[in-house]
Length: 236
Image (cartoon, rainbow, N blue to C red; front, side):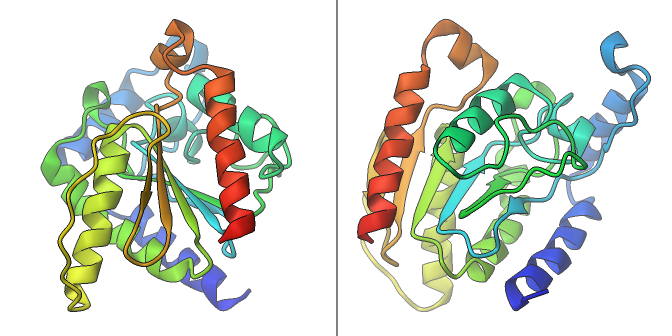
């Protein structure tokens, strides 16, 4: 196991054992007591969900939080729900995933040149984490950014993830004694923003069922984002 692998493994153990947010702990335990009929015989992960992927990744994907009956059930982010189906179909077609479907932690799926994580590691009620919960989880994103040395592009899925990455990068820079004037860009689908450390931040609408079923985010829109990422990774 290489150094990045070891560090990510240690970090993910910390994530899994986290109980910093009482509201989220209570909510994930409530979900466990009231599983829907279609999953009534399944065991639920029902813990914070760690990131996963290639330790040598050049692309980092940051989502919002695990879905109640997706990542919270399976123990892997974007796994076992419609959002994940949409995301992994794109990852497969663009060569980042060995499979177009992410079903469970034991499905042998492999990611290449991409690491996937979330702003908040526990499922929040109504998919709406509080500002305090986002702050509590930020330490884990900071560690991931430190460990993943090869990153060139960060793709954020949704406004909350976009804003969180901007704030996180700024705070990391400030702890390193680097202060800079930065006007926060407004989030729109496909936005591209250069970060002080040379990475490129890209924002996309979240592949939630609500967005994909209503046409707010289409397959062609998502493909355009990944086509741009492919170009950037070749040029950076």
